Image (cartoon, rainbow, N blue to C red; front, side, top):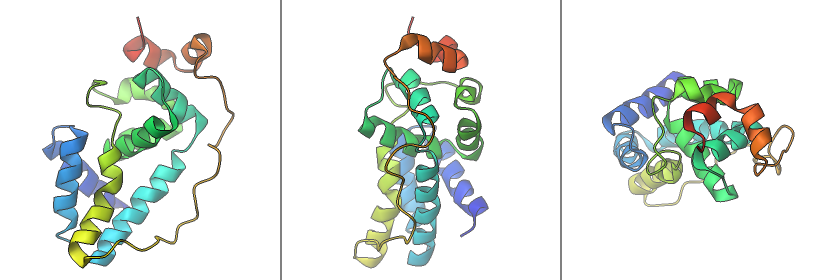
Length: 173
């Protein structure tokens, strides 16, 4: 599976789910079980590589603005959700996290920002196809610390300065 096919699967399931990440995860599993096990592992590798690429302080700060704070787990689920938004949103967010203010049509804290189930979809599909747990993907492990320079997510002034677009459109107040 190449990168284009990976993103086509992500996009088609998001569109069919009308943006609901839980429904998208269910549709993703349904779509992946139509593939052979090696293709499911390829999909998992693409997903995991992007998940690891998004382990950055600046992306975490954007999650904190959108979610009104972001614990370790919340940021993990946010990164899965971000991948689920498709290539344009994902790559745009990595290029400039504040650009999410323009890239997202809407952001509803009740359903958006938490794509935990998306992170398990390939594992679930692989297990349904083979009856066994997916093997190690052979990717380098995620770095111990996010890339970039850490900063205090509790500092409202720092968040406002770093993410003016997100704060204006989706922030508190």
